Structures are given as C-alpha cells and as structure tokens.
Image (tube, rainbow, N blue to C red; front, side, top):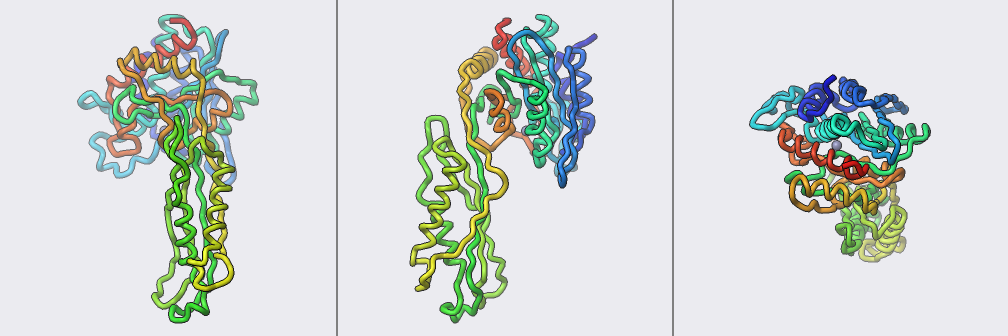
Length: 397
Ligand SMILES: [Zn+2]
C-alpha cells in the first residue's frame, strides 16, 4: 500500500473538494482515506445548534505508548470570490511555475497535507511515533465557529482524550517559511455604546439634547489615553472605533440617538474583565464632563452593550514544545523564527484550555485572496519541519 507521503498529492486531493463553509465537500472523506492506512482510528462527529448550519468534523487518533501530540486545523475554506479573476480554477489544484493554485492552498489544507505527509514518512521510516498522534479537524473555522473546535474538544475530552501539546497548522509566516511561530494571541472584545438624547429643532438646542455631542466625548475617552505600552511578549493594547451611526437624514433636526461600535485587542496586562471595567470607568468619567452637556445638569445618558463572548488573551510557556519546534525550523530553513503573539484570533484560543498550543504553518500572503497558492518547495520544507518536530518531540530521531 502506498502511504500519503507526498504533501503536494495530499493537498491536491483536498483542494479538489469544494469545502466552502459549511460544506464538507468531500474533504473529510479525503482525509479519512489518507489517515486509515497510517493506523488512525477516525471519527466524524456532526454538531448542531439552532440557527446555525450542521457541521461535520473529524477526530483521528493513532495510539501509541507515550505522550500525545494533537495537530489541529480546518478543512473548510472561504468562498472563492470572483471566480473569473482566478488564473487557475479555485478547486483545480493546478501547478504553474512551481506553485499549486487553489482555495485553501495555504489556509489551511496545505498545513494539513504536510502534517499527514510527515506522519506517513515517520510511519514508513520508523514504524510511527511511540506516543499518540491525533488530528482535530473542524469544518467550521471560517464560519460562525459554533459547531467546530469548541464542541470537538469537548466531545473528545468527554471520551477521555488528553493531550500533552498541540500544533495548529494555520499560515503563520508573513513572507517566508520559518519566519514566525505564534505562541499566544491577544484577547478581543467588541462593544456598542449608544447615547440617548432628545430629538428637536437645531435652532432650539435648549429644548433638545443632542446625543452626538455626548458620543464625541465618550468615543474620545475610549481612544485616549493609550491602554498600555505593550509587554515583553505582546504589542500594545489597541482599540479601534469601527462605526459611528446616527442615521439622521435631516439637517435641521437634532437626532434622538447616536451609536458607536468598537473592537479592542488587548494584551496580557489585562483580562477580559479588567478591560471591561476600564472601559466602563472611562465612559462614566467622560459622561460627567460639562464640556459635552451644553449647560445641562445630568450626565450623558448612555448604554454599553458587549457583543459576543470575549476571546481571552493567552501565552504558551511550554519550553519543550516551543524549543523543539524552533529547532526543527532552524534545521530545515537555517534561520531562527520569531516568537510572536501578533495578528487576529484563531482556534488556538480554545485549545489552550486543554494543553499547551503553538501555531506554525505555511506562508499566509495569499490567504483568502483570488489566486491563493503555495510553492511546492514550501510544502516539502514544511513537511520536513513537521517530520523533524515529530521525531524530536517524541524523542525518536
Ligand atoms: Zn485558517
């Protein structure tokens, strides 16, 4: 039997499955076909929740006598966008000038294809790692992420699964393979602040209460002063105002309401709770400033609503995991990767509640774009990095 040792072949099989969230598109079946000959037991639980599409996920485990490494990722992809703008068809896996084209090539079917090839080579050369290896693959990362990684982790943990370390194969490298390992992520929270005023004629402001004045003050308080200057491992906390809405078409009417929405990315100076307290405090102080009240005695009347659940900030401190991966990268590409906590959130924020987690995958330059593509040479190098990591982490070089 031929084992799936060629990452480009693995990736081509995955790209040819049109698995745009929430469709499985055959991608998990393709994975199962690769994993079974390697000795993995494969489960494909489907999770549901009212108001969201059902999602099929995959958990595969190859059991051994030793520590347990989990590789996590997703086979779902974002829509192709303007299909006519693609140089090669988005589900064709065509190769041109040493690059394979297709939606998901780097985000992140490519990472999965390389990890499977790495395990296959290890099985072929050494008979497989002495510990356990599992793949935790969701079909709901690019969508609402409700029926994906969170439930899959709970499902696996309830069956007694325990992991010692995890690698997420998202594209972490900005420019070249080996640039960057992600060892944590900032937290994220969104909110909306609405100021309630009283509608009236612009010529008689004393009879009305203009909420736009109050909102200007509250927004200013959200932005200044800066929250912090950054920490050893994280960039400074940053708040962005994402929208200001009054919806008033008239030029002679003072509106009744004004709303601003914002998102804050916070570092390990804070927790979700202390960020919320800080923002409440800033708004309360600004609401009492006379400057925004046009002689009125009462403070600015506002409501603050937090949207969704916060993503918590985290930092992985498992030296063996980080140093082993760093060493594998250095031996393959000859340079030291940066350890970073930059960028948006990822499913690592859920995995960190179960075991230490780092993220390392392909080069992210073309992710979510028309003509998403990956260098065939990068697929080979990432496979070698993962293979070396497996050998060193399990101590079986
Ligand atoms: Zn991704």
